[in-house]
Image (cartoon, rainbow, N blue to C red; front, side, top):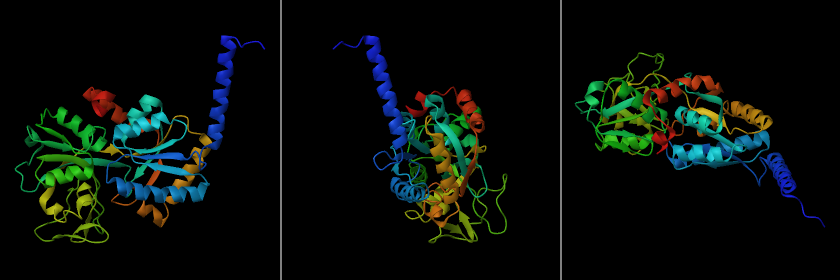
Length: 338
């Protein structure tokens, strides 16, 4: 029997590998080869896992496909995981993480979060209510707590704004998540923190850009924690402070909002670069339908999870503003993810 030439052997190996890839794609969504769903660890991992499993079950019922939920240890690890599985991964990742993932390995945005009618959100700068920090300039030299260097609202946007204002902070604390940032300010570990802002719900008077981010009067009404969430009077607080209400029910009395950032494009639902188009369309349809169900509020719609009211189609160009922020700061992936 004649031996195969080197060139012919290479062609045979390429053919075998290509055939294996096709079989793997045909098998995607089976019990043996579930679709990988990644969530960034911006809130408590157990909350994400529990809510993610609810989503996975709803998607399986709608599509017949199997999904496996993952909460990597960091924003960087989430991007790494998606890039390692370009044909089988879905990610719920914020704007900065998306821009990096798109640049690195072609991760492609399909939809973005809608939160109570808003397709944008904001960073909030928070300080203790008894702090002598009253202006943006007062942050110079102060200790700064942020969630993760890959967090758009927690780090990227505040970094741009601080640099543009010529403000040099003091020590920096990478707290590990938005909840931990609020806790660091609450406990006095940090002079100020940056985290996400979602407008409070004011009955009969929807919040608008330019309104006070704290539309309540603590000299008149006390805060209270109920089964529905954190309230001051009949106004529901939805920014990051509400996430530690169970352990710090007086968080609103102790921590105030100094200022808000410029608007930021909402977090993304993105797919790996080589994710099959037909499955992608089916999953998107199922997610739009899931967003209309009660179970959504127990999953990604929960204010203790990501607080998405729904999701809507969006294109990659919307995130050019984030790319511009990277350019203004001169930031590289290494700067963001370390």
